[in-house]
Image 1: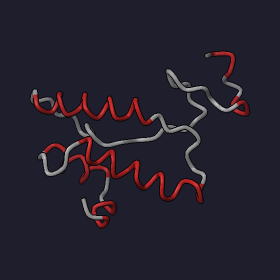
Image 2 (image 1 turned 60 degrees about the vertical axis):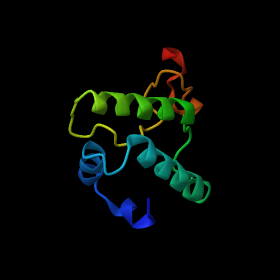
Image 3 (image 1 turned 180 degrees about the vertical axis):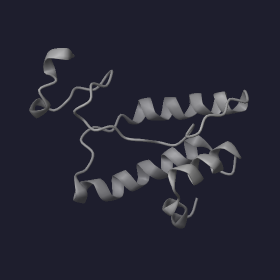
Image 4 (image 1 turned 45 degrees about the horizontal axis):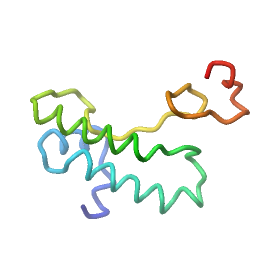
Length: 100
């Protein structure tokens, strides 16, 4: 997938995944490449659960193959680290330790 594709909007990325122009896994891998490239300098993402995201992308591909369609199905997203996320330990400054 060429780099210019990453000027897509979320809805155009979703349309490409839905139309099978790009797979959810291909889109995810490209996003992970960009995270690896830019996050060390930008320090935007604290935790990236690569195995879980790859598993989710494969799950999405199965759902799409079965005919399921949702507006943003297959588009990788990130969550602010102050939200409780199963399997991820939040940074201490969030005050979320008590709910884990």
